[in-house]
Length: 149
Image (cartoon, rainbow, N blue to C red; front, side):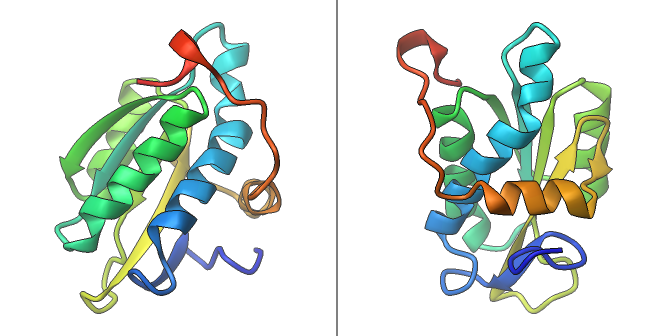
């Protein structure tokens, strides 16, 4: 595990530790690490984004969706759903990336970002480290019709 990812994603006080900027940067990096599986499968990478009912989930979901779409990933923002439901949708719809915005049992001012791999599985430490290592890289950005929706 790196400096950002803990035992279950990235967590902290919303808008101090877990910011919109961090959510966007993590999502762009995750798109490049996890989304390549979709590209190699012959389709544009796809993601499902869900959240719990914390107020900060709204702006974090917007930032995650923007980061993924700006990297060429089609995003289905499913709103408020429990983590197992987002994992199920990730697996059953065959998307490349699942994202859950939740800090689980942590206090309400906290929030977290949890990425799921294809199949709805939790990321292993190597994938989390790869995402973290690619934050802030200078990417070739998709243009025109190649951006995500």
